[in-house]
Image 1: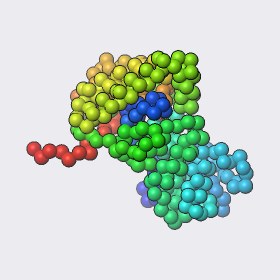
Image 2 (image 1 turned 120 degrees about the horizontal axis):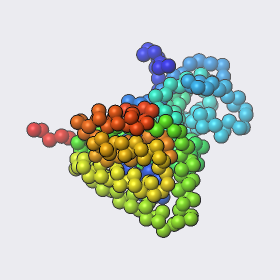
Image 3 (image 1 turned 90 degrees about the vertical axis):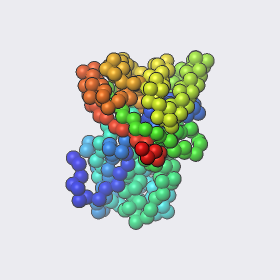
Amino acid sequence: MPFPANVQTYSAPGKLILLGEHAVVYGQPAIAFPVSELRTRVAVHPAPQLRVTSAIWDRTYQIADPAIHADPVYSAISLTAEALGCPIPLRHFTIESEIPAAGGLGSGAALSAALGRAVSFALDRQIDNESLNQIVFQVERLYHGTPSGIDNTVVVFETPVYFVRGQPIEHLRISGSYTFVVGDTGIRAPTRESVGDVRALMASKPDTTTSAIDAIGHLVDRARSALATGNVIELGRCMSDNHGLLQELTVSSPELDRLVEAAEASGSLGAKLSGGGRGGNMIALVSADTVERVSKALGVAGAVRVFSTTLKSNQEEPIA
Ligand code: PMV
């Protein structure tokens, strides 16, 4: 149920990885951008105890219970309070999310970021994005084990990024505007498992796995140049090649492959899975002429949900 318009909320967006997932865990670059139209929102209400309610669960936290430190929702709240030098605020936080869970759209990071912002409001303090990013990263560890940090960075700063693990954020230069159709397989696949399987593949077949990961890194660099120069054809090619390499890393699935093939057969310029894979979402680059056709084709090929989103230029357009 969406919040009524007069309720003050604190929010964060979803995200899509355009290229480079999985390889980013091994130090290669990746490109991701926020999906500002899909958000997680949190409202704050007075309460005698710490309570958090979503559409599907309702938890009251006993702060003395040590087991709650493994709970990502509690951790987002307690780490924010700690960073602000305050006790945990006894409030009722209610959550409304438009981002499907475990689908590669950054739902966990968006929830942590929105909760962090709501907690800082409840404590009458300001949390800066650098600190919030660190907090969301720590919570991502509880969800994923060994996250690269890309999800929290895009979701907290809400800007397209060229991301390399452990390096300062590079805000991506975008010339031209790019429309994507996103198709959801409806299969919820935990990122922790696919990341673990790539790690196992790296141990059993180090040579081929390393070369696939390096090749993904090269595609990301080509895609960065394509985005900077407005080369939509080249970007599409990089995306499709990236999907082939993700198949080699065993993180695609028959359902994802079916959606990628349907997008390509109906006129998309390039398509690939996005996020951890095995299920979740895929992303297809389209033109104004093909957006409808590709969206329909994804529905026919089994997507349970299809939406389109646009990555807009952040460069000064030349005056005609
Ligand atoms: O499934 P998501 O949206 O959380 O994306 C994970 C991206 C990976 O590269 C597979 C893992 C990571 O931590 O970067």
